[in-house]
Length: 121
Length: 222
Image 1 (tube, rainbow over the protein chains, first blue to last red):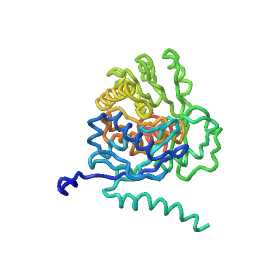
Image 2 (cartoon, rainbow over the protein chains, first blue to last red):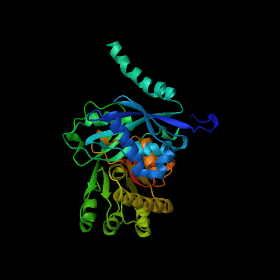
Image 3 (cartoon, rainbow over the protein chains, first blue to last red):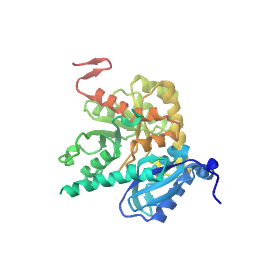
Image 4 (cartoon, chains in turn purple, brown):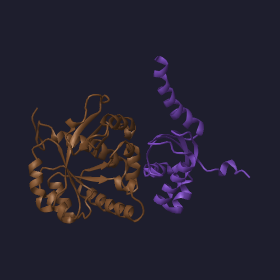
């Protein structure tokens, strides 16, 4: 059953880019993000942050969080440094109110910028 | 204009001599930094050729010796134009460090008190917050680091000490962007304005003090 529109919680979508030694798969990353948030803010804090991995393709991805918890989510993402022995660093590209905008404004734009020099060549 | 439009610097970068400085520098630039301070070996050993534009690299010296030898060690390096960083520790080390004029940053002092804070103000020593342990540790050890930082922040605010933030990176996988650093600093009570100052204006001020034209506070060759 869907929630009433007026009672729906406001969310923010964080677009990020991963730099890692090897490719990390989706389930590992998702588990690591949740455990990082949990170890930093505890169970109560995690329930308020309401985080979830929306999409991820091996390099770019989008995470959902509560509207007023973007700073805490950023801090938790910064605390991820190793997954299964693979060193990793997460760079936040930007925060947006809709998935579409996060995709177009941050990720698509970067991909366009990267592909342009190749066309010139 | 956003707070985060300033130029950011990271002190306390450890790099192995054989690691690729060029890669690290271009990554740091992509993460939003305008300069780094490398510790240890002389920077001439690294190939400084193809660095990205408007990115600067400075060298810094880290002093970690016994408290009794700290004063001599600081005097030895005082005239070199490198940034001097003392790794804070127990009370004896901190006290010996802040009472010797001529060094710049006391990083992560564990037992901080009002006596050390006053001496630090007199010798214009900057206090450093090392976010590396917060990124890498978990549980009890991280709680201890947070507690140390909270007390240090309290003294720094009361006595108007200058603060810097560092992420203690060893490779390009340890870099964190300035906004993330500010978010981490927010966890122990630092406001984002303080965090931005700690990464942009305070490093620039230290650099100005280390330039050859600078003689003393308020006296400068023009």
